[in-house]
Every structure is written in C-alpha cells, then in structure tokens.
Image (cartoon, rainbow, N blue to C red; front, side):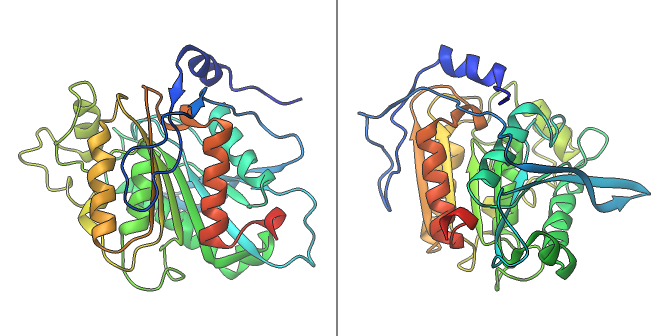
Length: 310
C-alpha cells in the first residue's frame, strides 16, 4: 500500500502553489497560468529499499544511507546514472528515512534512477564542515568500483537532489572543486529546492539566523570564518555541473538567495533551470506532479536518463 506523506499533503491542500514552470535560459518569472496544488509524494511499493548501508565512519560510528533500486533491473542491464538524496532540517534534524524523504527516494528509483538517501552529522553536536564532509564521502563511496558494480551505476554520472539545508549541501557539492565532474566527490547534476546559499548573514530571516549560526559554529556573522566556505556561491567556476533550482516567493528562505545564485551561475556559463513558485511552500512540499516531471526531465537531459528512460 502506498504510504501518503500526510503532513506534506495537508500543507499542499492548505496552500495553493501557483506558476510552477521553468523560466527558460534568461527569464526570472514563470507562466502565471499554471496552477499547481503542492506536494504529491508517496512511497512506491515496487521499489526495493536496502536500508542502513555504511558508506563511512567517524570515531567508530557508522555513517549510513539507504539505497532505493529501480524495479525490473538485472545484471545484464547497462549502467545508469545514480542520484544522491540529501534531506533537509536546518542542518540539525531530519533523517534519510523520514516519510517525505523515503518517498523522494522511491520516486526517483521508480523513474529508473538508483537513488541513495543519506544521513549526515547534524548540528549542534557537529558543525560545518562535518555534514558536508559526510556527503562528499557518500559521493566518493558511490563512485567506487564495488558500488558501481553492485548497483549498476555509472560512477561518472552521479546527480544530487536536496531540499532546504540538504539543498545547501547539494549545491555545495555542485560548486566545490573544479575540473572533471567524474572524479572525486564532484557530481554531474544538481537539483536543489529552497536552498540557503549565501550563509554570510545576508537575506536571512530573524528566526533562521540562530539555526544558521549554530550550524556554522559561530556566535555572530561578523566573526564567522566558516560562513563563506559553507556558501555554495563562494566556489562557483565554469566547470560546475548543470543546476535545477526551485524556490517559493515568500517562504522561510528568502527568494533572493536563489536569485543571486542563479545569476552567478549563469555569469560563469553554467546551465541553470530556475523555477519560482508563488506562495510559501518550502523544500519538498513543492513537489507536485508538474515539478516532479520537470526534475526528471532535467536529470534525463543532463545525466542521460535512468533505466526506464533508455
């Protein structure tokens, strides 16, 4: 039986998401005629989930992820791209197997992409860069020959999907490093929803500021050496992968965070698809059928498609 994402569906029913369509290469606004209705997520019973795979360890404590595998795959099938999923939660809460993020994992797998939902170290016990080092380690783990063979994934075609704080970490994976996207912890495509991008204290709501400082391990933004390294916008260069970015107009993370990021990416020549939704929906609460189909089209275009797209 499909497990509905109760909280998110309720939020989607209460709030109307308007104008969710791609902006094209240069535009900021989107077609106001489209009237989406918010989240449509459920776990897929046909997807095999392998929970609690250890991708690393810190001080003897294992770091874990869940694998969601497309149905009807066998050893004779050609390797396909894989997608790493990074949950949100203000860098201090959330989990790889929470109802909403498990639904994301099975949705991507049902579309043909082996998907891997990752847990990472959380604040306040662990501050930046601990969580980011964990997601880097997860990408490196996925690219190892053992995992590529086990899951039939192409190690040079690893995408990443994240929302909110997970969107920040996904975007940071996309802009960190330079050169060949197939090596190290570089990724080949990034989809982020509602991500905080500039962590230096600009375009920030009062209620979010304490959470951000907690994650950065700082008391003020004026004296916070980790703020710039934790900001994806700091690291942009022309070798970065394609991005898909979606954000609401009046949500908890100001839209200006994504707007400036898109401008900076495009100035560097990076392929960016940017969506702006009218309303307050945040992160995976944005995932109606239309947005889901556009994200899949983005991954199909930039990664070459999953098993069902072949």
